[in-house]
Amino acid sequence: MNEPIDVLPQFTVDNVIFGYDTDQLKILLVKHGEGASVGEWGLPGDWLKSNETLEAAAERILFNRTSIKDIPLNQMHTFSAIDRYPGKRIITTAYYTVINVKSQKIAASDDELDAGWFNIKELPNLIFDHGDILQTGLEKFRHQVRHQPIGINLLPEKFTFFQLQQLYETILDQKFDKPNFRRKMLSQNYLVNCEEQYKAGKHRTATLYRFDSDCYRELINQGFSFNL
Amino acid sequence: MNEPIDVLPQFTVDNVIFGYDTDQLKILLVKHGEGASVGEWGLPGDWLKSNETLEAAAERILFNRTSIKDIPLNQMHTFSAIDRYPGKRIITTAYYTVINVKSQKIAASDDELDAGWFNIKELPNLIFDHGDILQTGLEKFRHQVRHQPIGINLLPEKFTFFQLQQLYETILDQKFDKPNFRRKMLSQNYLVNCEEQYKAGKHRTATLYRFDSDCYRELINQGFSFNL
DNA sequence: TCAAAAGTGTTAACTGTACACCCATGC
DNA sequence: GCATGGGTGTACAGTTAACACTTTTGA
Image (cartoon, rainbow over all chains, first blue to last red; front, side):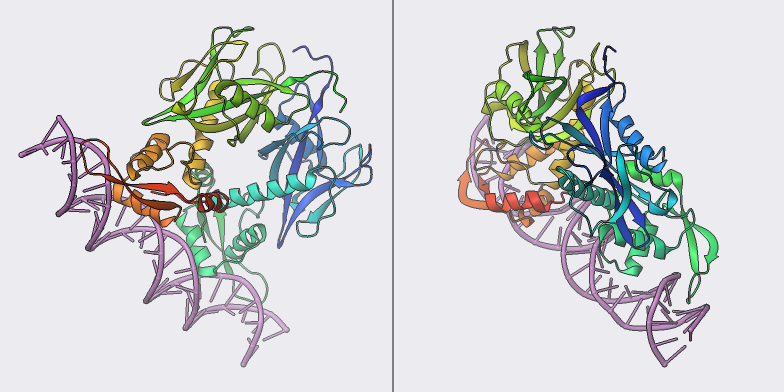
């Protein structure tokens, strides 16, 4: 390689990091500490380094704010409108992923004033075209949820049907019929009955399930059709 | 804007241009006339100009080889492996679209030796990572065909059910049951009976249909589910 | 007469959807 | 009792999938 400089000057990566928190879908935003957009909220992003791939940059951006490694990020779209960034021609590739809000502390990186989770329904104004990027990310994420299994890393290892249904209802912002939801999920054969009861509040105990990780992985490849 | 130069030196756009030709799905390739890859086949592509968007570049690349304008190209993926291009760090964004092979003459651009249609099943070796890009494009294209109406620009304005079914069978490389295919398409309500008969070879005349363009457009947005 | 395409009809199997219903627990 | 969540059963409507069958035409 013969790049004398460390970053590609016209190329960035921005992450749409969804956070699942019981009955809320959130998004990780950072408050900019430099440049024209100082003090405003935007998606966590950074310049692409000349010796890293887009995927590596997206993972680095995620790791810097959350200390999370080894979870897959999905490439979403590359945004290239001439005037998307003030005064300079900057192209950005956006990635999305979802993590559990409670699983890790978040932190702003050096050039940022703050980092925080925002409910998807109560967002501040975002810099540049980050509002559009977020909307595109939300659509792609919801599409994915309807066509691939989801839940590993978002639910505890053992979970009840109530928790699984709550996850789907929160992410898709839609209610499902309980018996139908149960049967739909069971018919995919990726849930394993732990033969164990879980005692929660003022009601009957619930059976715990876990994901069969082989079957889960296979369903990711095969595709799923969640049409309740 | 303050770019002194005309192109971004580390950024290209490559197009996967499918061509429909009765019972064959083809792909447009060009033979490189410059650089290390001289004489080899690859996807039509070019450098991104500093004053154009990725979409505009993709349209320009299409127009230069086919003289076709005003048909939508779909962004597919941005490829960024460090060593994907020999000796230089080049990132490329790929777009795909489909056109009718017979609708326009094709031509190589100035720095190319040749341009031609290749059957998707009989491809030469492609330069760089263009083979991967093509495979990704084929998957995305077929996914699109199963979820949105297709046919405008690929079929004559008035067409028979036989032609429509042949289009689907060729693109998806799969046979369908004739009565079921007919009913499935009719149930989408985007076909209009022209009340006109078409006389082909040694068999009974066929009813001509056309697309209802309002309904067709609406189905593109709504989504379609083609699960025969 | 036969092959090829045009077109209709029928049926079994499966899925989505909307419910009604009972169980267990804690206030 | 009643609210909350846990869990089963059922029945209708619609769709998928397979295939049998008739029609028209030209070689």
